Amino acid sequence: MKRVNPRVLIVESKKRVALEIKEMLHQYGYEVVGTAFTAKEAYKLAGKRNPDLILTNIEIQKEMDGIKLAEELSDKYMIPAVYMNFSKEAPAFDEKELLHRIELALSIRNEKNALV
Image (cartoon, rainbow, N blue to C red):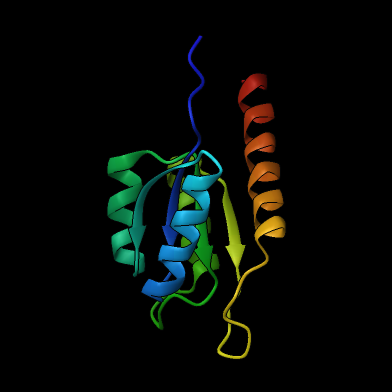
């Protein structure tokens, strides 16, 4: 049976950060199905691309934060989310910590799906 790489939607308003995360995810075998810079884009991509996971910054735009976005997408599409919190003071991310959170969220999702 062919291994299917987990499909991730990135929601990040800073293009440089989104690109760094996308490159890291590709390096570890994840398929990035899209990058959204706004909540509106995230809704469109989630509906079209069917990701296994949403990776979202908490602060994406003024109209809706990443937490509210992830809650709504989770309710509508049953997609788990991993939250990121980058600030101007600390714009970098801890690669190992982020990968751990992604794997944990996907593992929980897989366990829930196995029960259905």
